[in-house]
Amino acid sequence: MSRTGALILGDDLTLPDLWIGLHANAEMWIRAGSSPDGQRQRSRIDETDRRLLEQLRQVEAPRWSVFAEAAGWTAYSAIAIAWCSGADPETVATRWYAASLPLTAHGHGARAARLLPPEAKPQDPRLSVIGRMPSLPRICLGILSADNLVRDVTDAEMATAAPGVRDALTAAGIAGPSQPADGPQRHSA
Image (cartoon, rainbow, N blue to C red; front, side):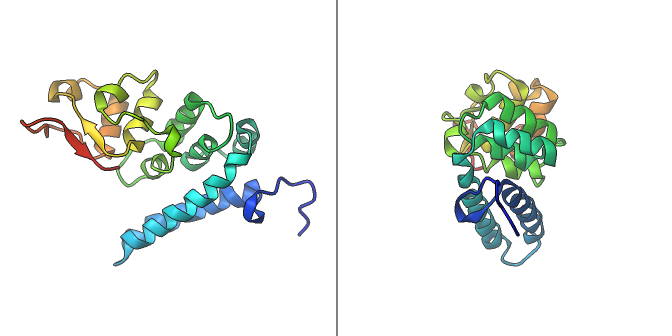
């Protein structure tokens, strides 16, 4: 097959190759959940996807955006743009949020959020800080992508969160009255 004129990334991949790989792996990741060694399989798939996404570091965000617009925005194509150079966090979050609804613990949106590059994840994992992000999509993406999320808000604050935020909290496994008396609760994403 001729690839003359195509943008060739490391490992001899084109943008369509990368998009197809991410989406095929997403389906394998879902199916692996019912396997006896599902956790090990899922870890390997996540590792493979991070290597694929790393290839996008050499791609300008507008170039991936044009491709994803033509191919279709999904939770994975939205997260992929975060790996591109010059990515806008608001664009990433807005595209991810629109493609991820409804937010569920085992849905594609929650898994895709965990594939954000480390520098795009919240640097402070406290819910009180993430909750001050500038938009609903960024708050939800922050909740689902944070490493070791810290619930440092009260049950009353949780109960009054916007519906989208409550969905993200439920998907992250921290919705409901579970604040221990001895301080904040940590959750692994």
